[in-house]
Image 1 (cartoon, helix red, strand yellow):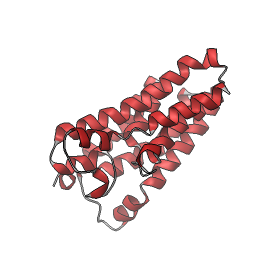
Image 2 (cartoon, rainbow, N blue to C red):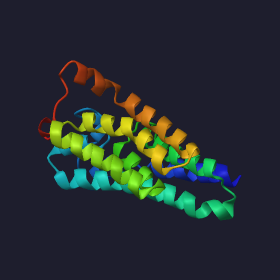
Image 3 (spheres, helix red, strand yellow):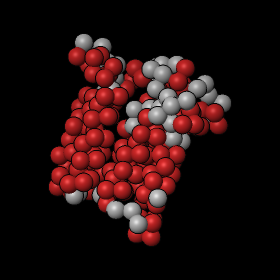
Length: 200
């Protein structure tokens, strides 16, 4: 029962869409109604409110970290195994993708993934973030940076985590790539806009 309860709690934490919450607090339109329709920091940036985009990024990343950290702290007393913690991490990510509070219409999970990985292992999280930053510095394309980081995440995880967590990170990465399928099509067709265009 402890494992199921903790998985549910993590899912609910993941379901907090900071793009929507921050936009409401700042008097901005719902990010699901303009631009790419994705409730994420890049789309919020299209409003021209950089502070709102930064708060969205930090909020989504923080909830990923907080949910996994909470699971790690409660696991011993709640009788939750390593596999249970991995399930909690995945539930957090799924909460972001399919938030119960917002009609199951969530974001792509890039910032939340970063928070989850940082909670699992600091060096793993930093390696993935470094890959995102390097790709972004070279391409200026946020979606491409996320895809490269997602592909590399399970590879890095192999060196830092147990096989149970590596399997979870692989599933998480595949889901993130799936959520970027429209971006992949645009990249292949040369139509994907760079970060500058995302601000317009």
